Image (cartoon, rainbow, N blue to C red; front, side):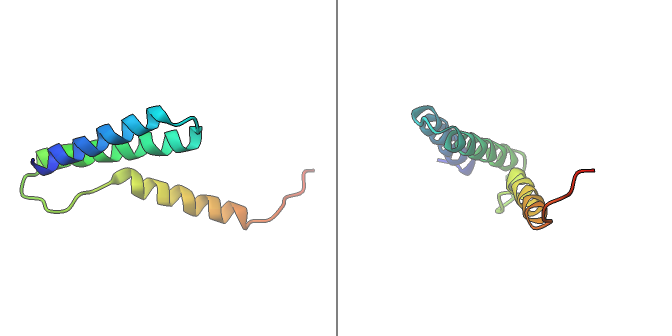
Length: 80
């Protein structure tokens, strides 16, 4: 089994698990993870010499997390 086939197998498993949960947050995370695996599989197909898998949405999630952290620590604001 090639790397891209393994990535697609992981994506299918995430999708299967997402269909089994009643928790919307968990479902959203599993769907996002499935997308990451699909992106990784496509990256591997496009660049056969690459040994590094890139997960763009993981970077995006860390940026959003940083934004949430900065907003959380900003403190309350007064409305005029």
